[in-house]
Image 1: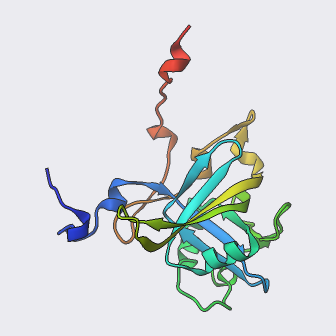
Image 2 (image 1 turned 60 degrees about the vertical axis):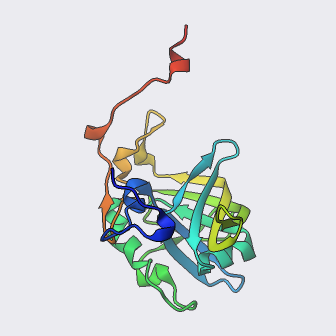
Image 3 (image 1 turned 45 degrees about the vertical axis):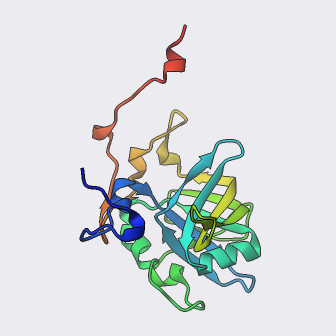
Length: 206
């Protein structure tokens, strides 16, 4: 087996970590600063961490606009990135001056939220309105802080397009979410043809 110690380099054409831990859902995060300027950015280190209350989170390499905005206003919105929105999502990853609005750059429409003041991506079929619960600076195993920040938010409002609910059940594949994979440009989709079901052992007990 190929072995390497990350602190000494991987010795490969591209760091395999992102490809191994993947594909990963995308944290397409909308935020705004105290002056009301909007920001929209995708983060591939993203996931859901708790049911009740629902808590989602993303990590940012560096103190970026999203982190600063969220720590200032205590609010953000997660937007589902879908296949139809892939190009627009990618455009929002550009490094832009603070005054530039990624919604406008990517040709996206702002929709008002119900609970928080941050706008949603109107074209996205699912949006989570969130309030900041924690912002944690990560550390290495030696306890030394690193320039990466984990932002966790409680989901206080959820918007789901009606067509994604069939008999009250959310249809994951029908939303056509896109997932980040390894390498500088790889993404994947989800299809019902790749679905399989497993029943947990505890659920099989009489």
